[in-house]
Length: 316
Ligand code: ASP
Image 1 (spheres, protein in one colour):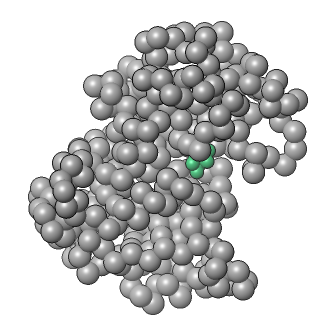
Image 2: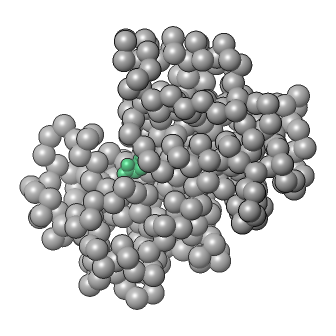
Image 3: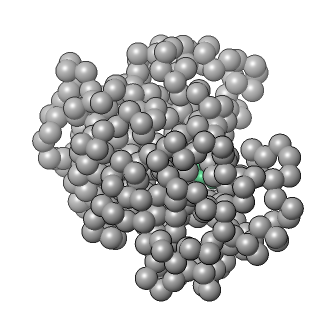
């Protein structure tokens, strides 16, 4: 595994299994009254968020804190980025603090890869434009494995705005790597040309949705749309919304959040026991702890930085 986490493509099946296993051991820590281990004590983690986030930012913060790291969170608004400082200058400035990791969320595809060139810290891609969101994919695998028992052979339908979705790209790679059969579905205008090269099938209607074990709905990413991709949200919902009629009783439902209620999902399915949405959020903390551990103290870490690698987490 590379010293950074920029894309799911860099992860082998073994890497993924190891991260999911590590996350499970951290789930035990999350059940304790004092949810902290000393693994990253004295090391600095920087959360650099150039785009809106609730779940990813808060769970990375909690993950770093539970590993006892010193944490700085910077958002574009309120930082010198507001004054016109470039990403490169910001990263070089922050590198003066000798961070062990920089977690970056950016509206620009490829931003995390650039940051990795400008710093000696481990860089974690927390979502770069339409490109990738690898920790989302890992927490989705972890959540689904916990509920379904095994991932092998599961049929996963990813439904909605695939074109603008970094989650779709990371999840197609992650689910297929773990032996799932992935189909993407949405209006032709929202399915990128050539997406099947990632190893998924394509459907333009929900007619065969019944064959899926898991329905993974995506948000309509209006902030990334430059034109009209669907005639109207109402028409989109009529054809692609997952509601109580379309979701079969044995199917599981996932969504990366934030959900647009009444657009991609109807209220009755969001609140149903088939929905894993709250569990996905919960998994975010332990999976991100596992990723930080892997890069800073585990097998992905440079030898000198490995502290207690492959040992079970001890209380702080
Ligand atoms: N939260 C996810 C992301 O940042 C999905 C979304 O925004 O729809 O990509």
